[in-house]
Length: 438
Image 1 (spheres, rainbow, N blue to C red):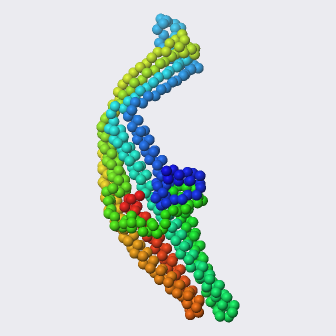
Image 2: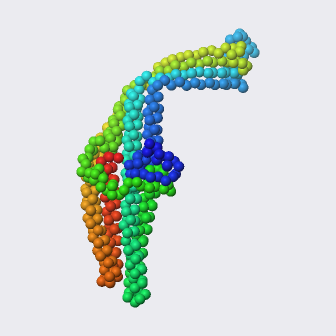
């Protein structure tokens, strides 16, 4: 029900309230890349039916109409009149009539062809491969969707953090300007605070722009029109502390069930069929046919009138036996065998790559988690130092230089925190893909 309501929102191009799980489901269903891949899979299913139909009865019909403006003339020996002076040796004769109508049906049936039998199996494996490609495309779309969703949340967290310090800076700036008016502060103090206020505002604008770009990417990955208002219903803290997400770095990896291994296995199967197909070209093929025609001829165009249609019916078999190809078929079989070995090596390499990749991303996720927790503590310390310095500055026991310096340190700590946050979220998204959990 939720999915149907969400689809209605998208169709109307109205506001969309969406959780991460809903976004992943939408990406798997209506991402532009997924839609294109689904069409490719549908084409493969039709290809299977097309190849299968080759071995089923084939019926064709034909009809022709011809009119000889000049009926063909041939010379025949003159056996009508005894030879003599003035008697021509040959006489012109027309064997035919001006009008000819022919209609017929032909039925053909493939009785045995080894290449056809292998081809049917190969096309079914090809359809399986297209389904594997579709699964990989869906995983890619969901991975990009998760990253875009996380990107929006991280950027909005940056906006929130920078927004907290701006009012305090603006208050300090007003106080310094007032104190300067009565001679207790210099213009330099005001300028320093002005710089910090502008830097904080610029950082906030930067995070806002990053959030807007991430929303555009999110709309693209879930297949909704650009400009559609999107509200994320999941909270950043909930996703960060989700037990299922935090446990990803400890989850075991099963390379055998990975979609890329399934795809590699299908490629091996396809190549095995290709090798069998080349071998089957040594085997004879047999086909049968039945033809029936109705033919009418006449001096005037009047089919079925004075002159009747006359039938012609025949059936037959056609046997094709390969005898000698000067080694062409042999070398094709050898090439197919070598290609089979290549795809088997690629399958092994894919398995080993996936294992190494999963461990690498797992390590990256663990490191990113540690870095985030460290930076979280650093940012809290920087904020405490800034807050204490702001109080000292208000009381007159700290110079504006100290205040601006600590504010700069706090801004840098915020930037670093958001960066570590993004690194962890992206690592988790990639780890989920590496473990084939989308």
